[in-house]
Length: 376
Length: 199
Ligand SMILES: Nc1ncnc2c1ncn2[C@@H]1O[C@H](COP(=O)(O)OP(=O)(O)O)[C@@H](O)[C@H]1O
Ligand SMILES: [Mg+2]
Ligand SMILES: [Zn+2]
Image (cartoon, rainbow over all chains, first blue to last red; front, top):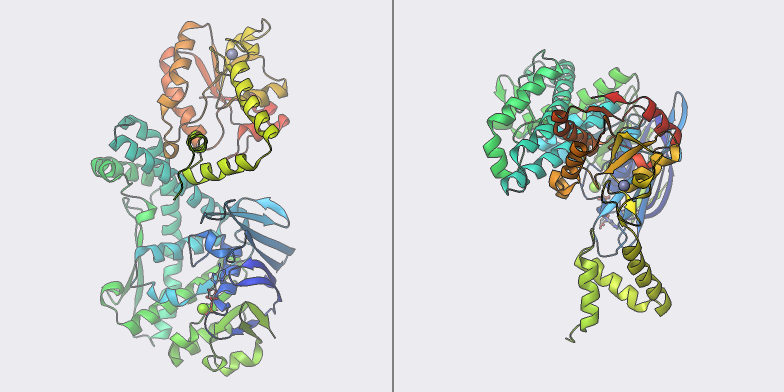
């Protein structure tokens, strides 16, 4: 699988772009605020149905324009596929809301049908916060990986989110005396089931990713440091439990915290509160790791993501590297480069060509990005 | 700053009461109406008055009606032992188009949706229960949409109806999950009717 063409219309600072891509590496360089990250964001949006940068789809539409379009041509074993995302501002000019619509080969599709055609691994400066930052980043890491492995996981996440919003609204209605407590039962039972399915998936995948990440980390630290990933599901003990049992645990946890849930109008347990702890040599990295140790651990996680996705699907994902080379010291940079050697397709941005190793620049298609256009 | 003249304020207030229309949109629509030729505004006003004068909801089943009872409730050819519960009047029309169903209906006017502030009290559920106590219905088909809100409504109804001892089935077979009944094609809907499962 590889991405052969990206075309943009009124996306961020691009009025119009049509860019053919090589199977190997593409380097995009240029000064600040020219549109390098925007281009990678467009590819990620087509692959993942959401921007890794913002929750607000309206930000994606070029200032003052009614709608944006991103179209990606993907060449796969079974022939070409066209993925398209359209973002339309809701009619009125003052509103800041926008809706996203998806199509595959020109036919409208639900968002989950977009996933799995163009698989990507992102490595962005924000990822350097993966260890130290809030749990949200680590949950996004899991969601992105698992959704690309299995569309039904993406569907389950959407379903869970919808049920969660309904149940939270009902908790507030109960708090304000607008509905009786008994009305929670249906939403609680179904939320617990949907949540349990996600947790069981997370547990299973993490058990498989853990040794891969640990192996990369051993290699990166010359056998000096042992990395461990520990899944912390919120409100359930997973182990080998079948989904129904996990759902029961979640339901019991919700029953235990019912008063608190009603008072706060928020569901207290479930995958939206999960975390993955990263441990280095029996210490939790979030609390004790130095900046350098954290960067190495992030690199181990990213390499594991790349490797696992390729192994599990039999296809190399596309690597989107935004400005990270300059953030890594020479040794870590070398290791990342080695991962590029057998050749996943990569889109790499840098402010300056000198920020990149010559070995990459020499074999890549190089483009300059300037004010929302891309030149050879 | 100049005052907004009273007739204009009134239009804004009235439009602002419509669902999904906030003050900003109400303002914009009001100015749109001001700019629109007089005869189209009169046609709109007349259509609103006319629909309210001539169309109402059936006292029995809450489908649209021209009098107290709808055409289906008034018909002598319908099977009154089977009652089909739907979310919206448009669902009745979709089911009628299949020609597969000859029973009567009950329109809930929505589905349970806490996000939208819709609980059992906002739907025609109490009316359904008292109707089933009164009438000789022996089978109820729950034809709520096959989405989460429709599913929640069907489960709630099944609980409410259980004490009445009436056979209850759920229309779901073959309908696209997450879809809306109104958009299901006729063949799918017809198949759904023959394949309904008991709760
Ligand atoms: N919706 C938008 N419409 C027009 N320009 C935008 C929009 N969103 C961001 N931009 C512009 O894009 C530029 C940032 O592009 P980006 O790709 O992040 O830069 P870089 O090349 O440094 O990675 C900024 O100048 C910003 O103003
Ligand atoms: Mg950038
Ligand atoms: Zn009627």
